[in-house]
Image 1: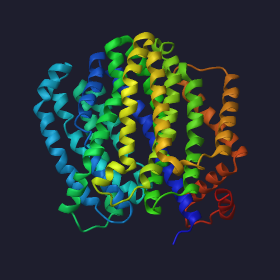
Image 2: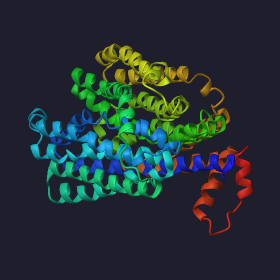
Image 3: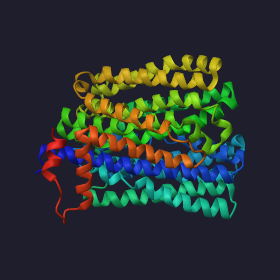
Length: 500
C-alpha cells in the first residue's frame, strides 16, 4: 500500500505529465492555426471559428453524465462503460438536430454546406471523449497525457495534405479537425480499456440517477458557455476591428490554460480521501504557481514580438489588451480548477436530487449567475467606451469576481493551502528572468521562440537554486525517467525535499 509520500509525489508527477502534454498541444494547436491562417482566405478562416461556435451549442450537455459518473469511478464504484454508452446515445439527438439545421448554418455563415456536414462527427466524438477522459482522470490522471497530442499530430498532417496541397479550403480544414477528434477518441478508449476492467455495460438505475441530477450541471454548462462567449459577442456588435485586435490578444492569453491541468489529479484524490488533504492541495498549488507565474511574466514581456509572429498590424493594437487578459487567464488557470477540486471533491458521492439545493454544487451555480448578471452591463459599457482594452479589463474584473466567489464557497477547505514560499520564489525568479532578457537584443518574428526557451532556462535554473521543493520535483522526474530497472539516484534526498 502506498504511503502518504508516495501518493503525494504521484499526484505531482501526474500533474506534470498532463501539463507537459497540454503545453505540447498548445504549440501544435498554434502551428495548426498558423497553417490555416496562411492558406485560407479571410472568409474561410473566419468560417472555422463560425462552425466551432455553432458546434458549441450542441456540446453543452456532453459533460453532464461524465461529471457524475467520474465521481463514482474515482471511488471504485465502477460505471466507466455505462457512462460511455449512455453519453454516446445522448449525443445522437444533438447530432441529428445539427444535421437538420446544417443548410441554415451554411447560408447564415456563408460557409460551404459540405464543411458544415464534415464537422458533424465532432458532436458524438466530443461526447465520447468527455466520458472516457472523465473516467481516465478518475482512475489514473497521468494516462490523459497524449490524448490531445495524438489528434493534433494527425490534424497537422492532414491539414498539410488537404489544405496546403489539395487546396480544399474550409472543407479540408474541418475534415482535419474531425479526423483529429477521431484519433483522440481512439487513443482515449484504448487507455480506458487498460484501466477499467468492468463487465457491466448498462445500468438503467445508475443512468436514471445521473440524468436526475443532470439539470444543475447542464444549467451551469449553459451559463458557462454563454459567459465565455459574451465578451466576443458584445465586442463584435460594438466594433469588428476591435474584435480582431482582441481576438489576437485572446489567442495568446489562452496559452495559460494548460496550467490548470496540473490540478487534474487533485479532484479524484480529494474524492477518495473523503474530503480534503491540505498537504496534497498545497503541493499541487505550489507546482501550478511554479509554471503559471513565469508564463504570465513571459506573456507580458514578449507581448509585442509574439503578436508580430501572427501579424505586425496587431502587435501594437493588441499589446495592452493582452496584459489584462493574461492576468485574467493567470487567475483562472491557476486557481479555478484547483478550488473546484476542493469545493466539489468534498461533497457526498451519493448526493440526492433534494440535497442538490443545499450543496456546494448549487452554490457554485448561483455564483455563476451572479457574476454573469453583474458582468453583462460592465462588459457592454467597457467595450463601448474603450474597445478591446475595455473589454479585456472587464474580463479581468469577472475573473476576480469568480475567484472571490470560489474562495467564499470553499471556506475552510481553502484555508492554509496557499504556498507563500514557492509563490515568492517564483516571483523573484521570474523578475530576475525578465531583467536578464531586457538586457538582450530583441528578436522579431520566429526568433522570439528562441528567446522564450532561453527565458524558461533562466527561470527554472533560478528556481532550482532558490526553491528546495523544486529541486525535489527535478530529482523525482529524473528518477521516473530513469525507470525502475536502474538505480534511482538520490531517492532518499527526493523524499526529504518533497515531504519537507
